[in-house]
Length: 200
Image 1 (cartoon, rainbow, N blue to C red):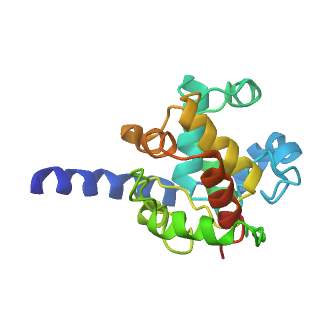
Image 2 (tube, helix red, strand yellow):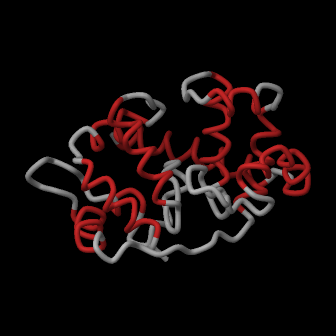
Image 3 (cartoon, helix red, strand yellow):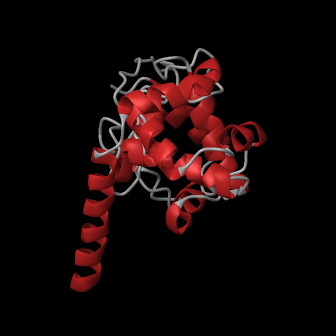
């Protein structure tokens, strides 16, 4: 167990060093096609499309690579990433990570349930607390490639959770998100997505 942890930390350190060498300016140039949907600074106007500003560079690069490999399916994204190299993806990740995301607000009617699920999960159904991986303020965990969530559009988060629940999306490590989402009701998903939108 100790050896496995040391190996994991070693490769995480290597990955971090790789991203330290990413070129933000080159990332901005390569991101031009992304701006139409995600905005020039990574804050999308359409709540169906995710905000990328302030997201961890490694997480963005992984998602781009997954779209290219087909392990995450989205026709529009597949065509956008087809000609991107690994370095391009790292540069794009670095560019959006350097931007500042916008804050949102939660639906007051959903805050209690959303906060309860986010902070403590649902012990009865076996839903784990979101903050265990994504942090109390939704800042995520870059080394584990757990995304930042704070301020993310509720509509996008709802779709993501429902896609994990239906297994339409399956690029989560160890099926973690699929195992959680399959235990969530529509009301819980809507409430936690709204709560996340208001997280700061």
